[in-house]
Amino acid sequence: MSKIIVPETCFPELKNEAIKWLADVFGLNPEYDPAMQPTIDQYGLPWFRAAALVMDDKTGKMLLVHESRVNIKKVKDENFKKWLVETGRCDSEGWTDGDGGWNIPAGRIAQNESFEEGLAREIKEETGHSAKLLGLLYVRWEKKYMMPTYLMKSISGPESHKTAEISETCKFSIDGIRALNDAGVLRSPESVMDSINVYNEFRSRKRDINQINPWPGVKK
Image (cartoon, rainbow, N blue to C red):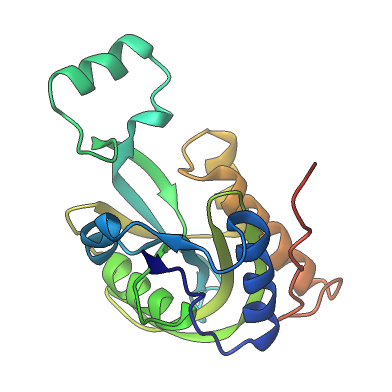
């Protein structure tokens, strides 16, 4: 068995809270089956992710990506979902081609990467942009993974960017992102809107940057 290790970070409090989360959710000194290693090498650590609001310094707008793949878990039509599986149109993790919706840059952390290194890589891969870290907005604590969300500033990058999984990138105002949410076209609406709400609290001085919300413990 292989040990699950919390990635490094430049925020000591984040590391401490992540260690608490890992122990509470998976037990002391948790391990994973080595058979998972090929998947981890390809996709990253399933327990640790990072996301960011990437701000354009000139316009104040946020950089979002339009994902061209969707997980069948989010397909509401059960007959269509069954058809995708039976015809082999999704991979082993349930991903298939389709409209994955708009999202902030985010992804899994690779082994031996810090949270911040992994996020910088994800931003570059998904948007083509290099970005500067401004601070930590908040941490999303889930049962199967944890995800710190940062505030970043774009330093350089193309106006448009496409990959096998990203069909386009675009800059949106805060009101524009709220409109996307109202239209139901955000990939991870709760995560995106929580990020926007915390950012607004920071802008209105109701919350300090790097004010980490601690792991609340396992809900009973």
